[in-house]
Image (cartoon, rainbow, N blue to C red; front, side, top):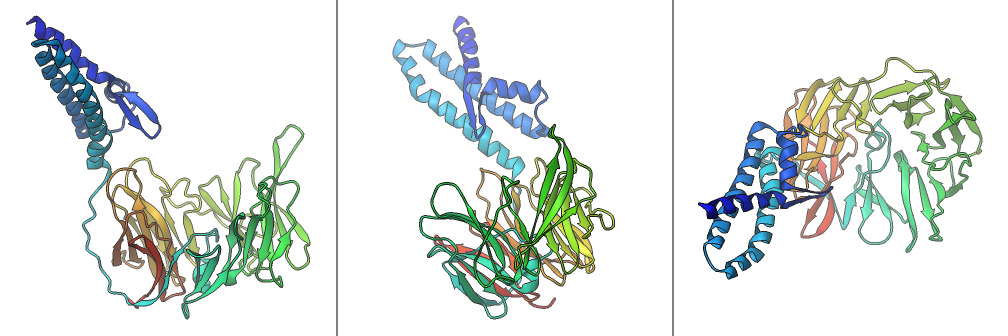
Length: 443
């Protein structure tokens, strides 16, 4: 009886086994306390029961082991050397992987659909997502940017004939990045040629004979201007503060590329509106401003807000994850703590909402310029589980899925409609990437 009591007391040592996760670690006992007593867990009852069952199973195994050790010679204590790491491994695999998989990842058993013909393939390349604003600038011009696996450049793919125009923007050993692009290959980009962390800013496209070096505003620490939808101008936000550091005004600065002249437009917004310039069109006289990450505003050339803010219901903090069309919009979740990721739309063709099975998030979304189809790329959102990537296309008028393909995990294919009847995506097979352009049938 005494041996059983000692073994029982020693079995509680399992609650000192560490649980290791991406943000640090914890002891099993403290983790269970937080779940059941501290109120720090939103796990459902069955999940809590399985966690408790795992802990009790380990404690039972420890009791059995100690009960056997105490009945024999001292050499039996040496068995703790392999048993402790084995218990640590079983605990972490069970608590951090196998049990969460049952509740955080849903099986996606929908079959592949849509036998769409391949219009062309570009080998050793992948589609890449760049800042383009919210108004389908590239979809309307039938273009998408590619990252070429060989060399140091990008390529601009045109959907009409599948031609690729090379853009060798970056030199060997130089650091840099594309800041903003719009139709026709017009872009703002930056280069660090000396490797000293100082970037030169450049403009290429409409309104300039070639690559043009830009003058960076002295009042801005991090300059990331948007490019006019038709090219030929840059715009950015500037915040004015008083001597105490309080915000007094928000300005839009518009620079003409050909003349270098600048125009200042004072926004009619509250000081702490936290505005962000998404895109603009001087031809239309409209700036799209994101306010507090949850309201999309149309602002005129005089700085006044045009019409009511766009605030899709249930999508607080959508940020960049919205696309505008004539008479409609598409929005999707950028991040969710709990629940499935969602895609919602309100277009002239129809309204709807679709949910992504648990364990996946939206990697990319594109809409055809006519608002008929919405293409979505998903990839796993967790560090556990073996979840394939997916590309699917929804018909906007009724929400019916008309195309689906499963891709290699972590493909994270960026999608782009090249006009109304072409869809570009990245395919990864045997470690190499290629761009595949599909001919979109009329449905």
